[in-house]
Image 1 (spheres, rainbow, N blue to C red):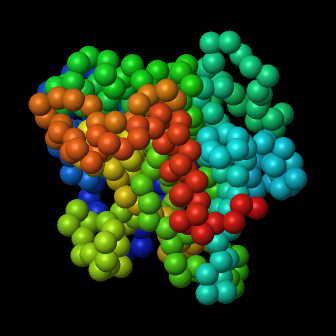
Image 2: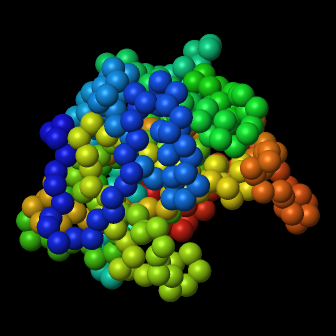
Amino acid sequence: MDEPLRLSEGLPTIELPKVSLAKLLNDDELEAQTVFDICCRTGFFYLNLMDHAKGEQLWESACLARQIGQNVMSNLSTEEKNKFVKRSGTLDRGYASFTREENGQTSFYEAINIPQDELFAKQRTAWRLPVWLEQYESNFMTILREGNVVANIILGILEKQLQLGSGILTSSHRLADASHSFLRILRYPGLKDGQPPFTKPRVLPHRDSVSIAMLFTWVCGLQIPEEHPTMIAPDFEAEDSWRWVVPVYGHAIVNLGDAMPLLTNGKLASGKHRVVHATGEQAKLDKISVLVSARPADSTPMKALKSPIIPQTTPEQKDKKIESAKEWGDNLVNNFIKKMNFKET
């Protein structure tokens, strides 16, 4: 199923802007300005991968990863999957599964996490993929490698638009650096016959603890708030402000994560989103998504950079402890798991 499924009619959708990878690779100034404007407002856009060979390869590799995830997570026993051990305090390595109970209903999802820094380490460590994934290592490396290229194209544009020096952002997002960047294949099981849909989101509203995320998905379920949502409490949107994001063939859904507003003191936006049950016949299907992330290298100081475009820090901000990217990311991940009210299973 390489062709994404259509959303049921009558549901509120959001028309994300579409950006051309080919134009970005060709240094198209108008397309670069479009990316910057989006990143200052919502941090979400479609990236058309089919107008360049690099993008086509990334799309094809993501489609294969979807098939791998479906076959592995649907058919292997939980005992076998748990042998792909997690890294304590993070979600960048190993098999993970989560349940959340609400109003007598149980929501479940699971994920395989492939760590970028382990696959591309300059000196290989004792870490290895489990036997049921090792035959796919070259495909995982292709996704991470091409995803890193795309992420650094976007970061390079942001450097220029923010009037930062060349390499200020890209030098902290190199492929082989220890960074907790990852490839994640997620599976949200479809509803069984007679099973009522979970009335609350499968994953509550959140922002990603990354710099850039690229999502490949084929079954509907991703939602983001409209650009000017109705707020019923601080950081809490009214239900009718949420919009469905429709999967598009040959396109990745790109969003900025929480690293970017931190490094730019709020100049750039982090894309808020949630995952809900699909509707209609799609609700019976497993939702498999492939997520490629780019995070700053572990040693990166997580503080606002300086440029004429970035707002100056306040005295209160200057007095705060500066965390490394590793400390910052670990804290956000742990807070995310607590906020989601998930139980690791």
